[in-house]
Image 1 (cartoon, rainbow, N blue to C red):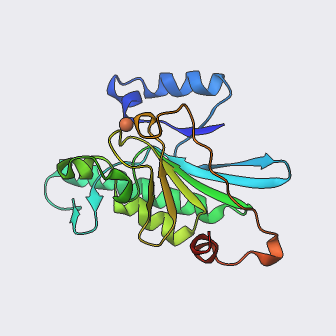
Image 2 (image 1 turned 30 degrees about the vertical axis):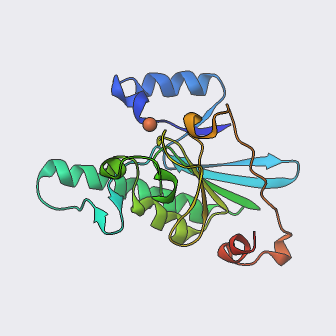
Image 3 (image 1 turned 120 degrees about the vertical axis):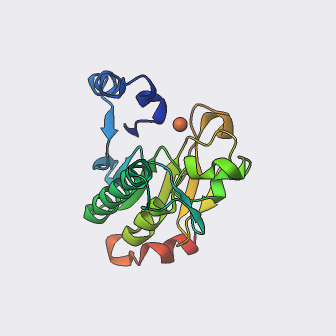
Length: 191
Ligand SMILES: [Fe+2]
């Protein structure tokens, strides 16, 4: 089972310890990399990691000014680049982008607008749109909305526990035959 770590793991400087406990329990902890699962003959590629904030188109922080601001955005940029590369490298029947922070603002609806920049970043959405994916999943936005889309039309699901109100959610993804497999966005728009 692959998961990303969240910001709470980092709050007490215990991210390495928590990651180790998860790995010892057989969990694949994603940090900008990817893993491939065999689901009864269908390959499922999951690329992801924690991600970070910065905001969304027209209302975002930029790589400018104080070192602290540059470090903030560069953390997101670095992750977005790794996410894009990991998604691009996957050659699987179905591909999922899995992050803690949100890659689009749709699934933040219900949260105060003022904190959107601390809940996610369009840079991750661009990385996902550029590489292609069948689904993007995130958490972190406890007062948000379950369903949304990236700017490029890839479906996004906010699975934060207070949002879905269950321990898990089930999403059905088709796995087309390789010969029938068109561009990801084509299949998404038809879904
Ligand atoms: Fe969080």
